[in-house]
Length: 321
Ligand code: BDR
Ligand code: CA
Image 1 (spheres, rainbow, N blue to C red):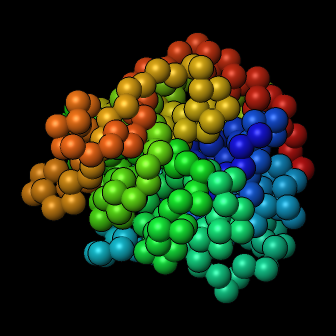
Image 2: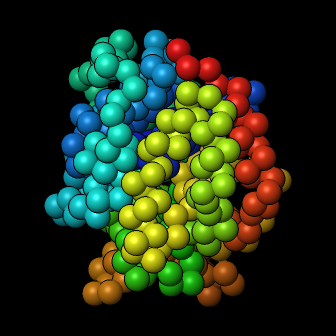
């Protein structure tokens, strides 16, 4: 069982990713959920969403939610298209299914930032903790600055949803949203860590968030109905932008659960942080021409049927409250 800190900006697809992680206790133990701006810049709203999801699964008393960066490391928040996609409340503008939800019973970390928590928790458990990032890499970039080499060496590995190789973005023509929303942090993370798995658009675009699979989730139970509801606005707006919706964040969790469903290739990946058109683009050196270690396993292919079956089988096991 892999212990993770799940760093996220919930977020429609983040929500499904959280459910999938909670539904897979044999493979994943979520030690904490840390919150980063991205799909919204209201960090309290994003944290409340995480608390809501935990409460729906009756897990709010054993998984802490810790708030993190409200803006990118080096510039102002510019993720407003994320608010359009995920809705003003981050979960597709649906009504919250629990009235009295916005309270996290674990108060222990209220004065700790996500970056500080990440460093402390990793140093207390050297070699044990995987950082699974499904939002912009700001908290982890800040953790690198705080924790330095000892912290970097103590992280088990980094598995992140973000990036795209070959020049197709979703936030911009060149860049995927998590990297585009803090390209500076992205560069810090790809520079620092020796073992990264990049679950980027090359792979996630093979997993459409289709009407069929939405209906199948809906039929499961109340949480499945919630997954259907939060994806309504999300899928509609992306279709209207000619950007077919897909399972982004849950794919990183599925990789932790069932790596055999995926194929990939090692490369040295770096992040463009100053390009006029390309800021946030991930660039892969497959052959070592930069003379740097091939630190990243770039996922390139996924078994769609296998993914969908595992997702539905696992979500089916969740019970509301
Ligand atoms: C990523 O950007 C966000 O909008 C999603 O939650 C996901 O993490 C996809 O590019
Ligand atoms: Ca996300």
